[in-house]
Image (spheres, one colour):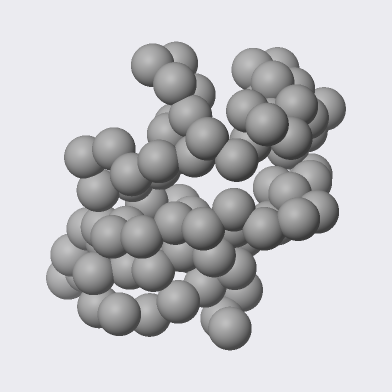
Amino acid sequence: MSFMKKIIDVKPLENYKLILTFDNNEKKIKDMKPYLEKGIFKKLKDKDFFKQVKISFGTIAWDDELELCADSLYETSDNI
């Protein structure tokens, strides 16, 4: 049985990438570029908005309507 992952730190990088630190101290990098043309994620094209990413209840969010699942991020991010 796998336990839900929690993100404990996030750092936005240039080129729409995020460094994610999970509660098991693993660090991963997530490329957000493939999302930038999809629905609500288009808001992330604004680099100032993209840099406002924050931790919210163990995952990441930009505002009240744009957040991503920590387990999904863990599975789809690359190891550093």
